[in-house]
Image 1 (cartoon, rainbow, N blue to C red):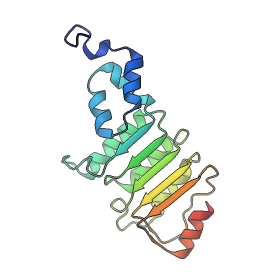
Image 2: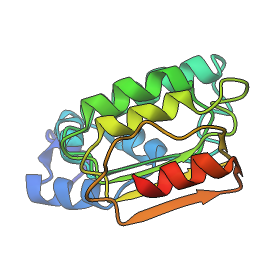
Image 3: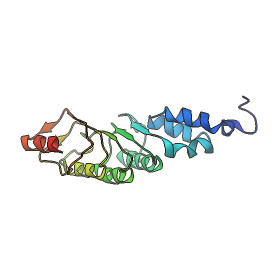
Image 4: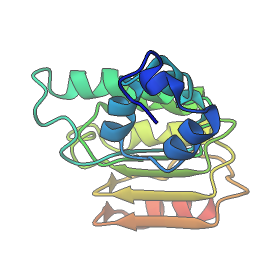
Length: 177
């Protein structure tokens, strides 16, 4: 295939573009591919996974605000998002909006919350109830001092809380969900 021709990257068949993008999950890779051509950008709504590594926004000048904006744009663009993994620092106040936007399709949620919740307790985690189809929930570095108000998560099969500081009542409440 001649990449220097008139069509360039837009000349790739849609099936090839979709196959490539369906194997991407890193937010950096998705952003780079979406910037390549219009047809690639048009496939972003069909991405099933988004992964934001710990160092995803280290070079960004805006810090957490920049991360929040980028995460929000990508979550809102990925209309069929099934798995969201965020290890980079983000604002806990934005999480409810992201979960509400993808509540129908989101099945797996993994968050590193130590930096997001510094000094704010576990109250922002109550928004997990906005994603009733969750099958797997993994939380890293959480301080949980009270029972979460998640309600019943009937489809939840996996609950992992790693490196957390927990109160006894909070643990029993999380397990009851």
